[in-house]
Length: 292
Image (cartoon, rainbow, N blue to C red; front, side):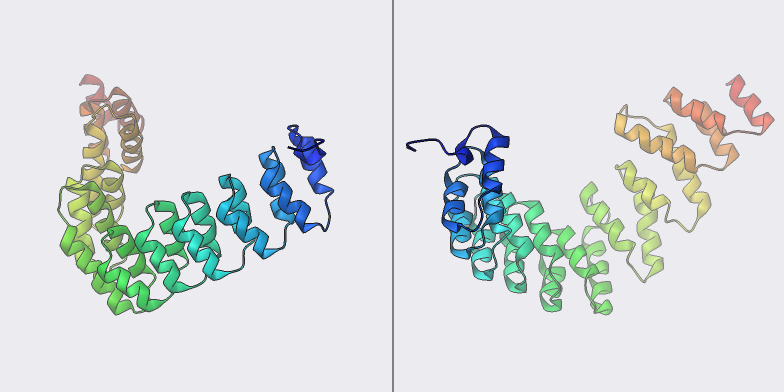
């Protein structure tokens, strides 16, 4: 208990922060504030004024509050300590802050392999540049997204192309929208355009995810086929409000007057019928839609 209540320990946030901002030079006092102030923001301000790495390490490892630990981590310089926090802190935000300061490629790779939080893994992966580690991830990682992302970072384009083909061969035509989406992105990086077009056709025609169907259709060399797929997307409706946006996009991409008339007559959603009709200029087609 304090015999009196110092200003930095006030429950009034503005008063506490002003008091901490006036503290200059005394690392011991700043450390005390960072550990004991009632106001969380005052603790964070104190941490930002600290320079003593031992004190910062203690707060980063043992601090009561996540945001205070994170602020301390952001000022640490020891790679070993940062690695320990990146692997072991209970909070993903704190682990992520440590990852952002890590430079050791092997330690970053360990985080990619073991962390349970997607964003922490992603932050670690984004900093990977070691080609041997990237090649290992591209060839062997259990996560398709990581395999593809690693392949895209390879400087060895022969190996990268091999990985893209493997990903497609192992996952193409499986009834899993996530795998189909990864195959689509792999195809977009293929040098083999014949294989890429096969993937685009299959996804554009058969995938259950409208966003991927639209994206694949936009990659098709056969524009007549692409137009037919846009019409098919626009006509069918499953009452999903998100899918309606994709159907609108499909109509925007439709330029074939006969297909626009087909959508205007047959779309299950009246808004899609109206949108297609509004794009028609041919009086004969407009008349046939009006009679339908």
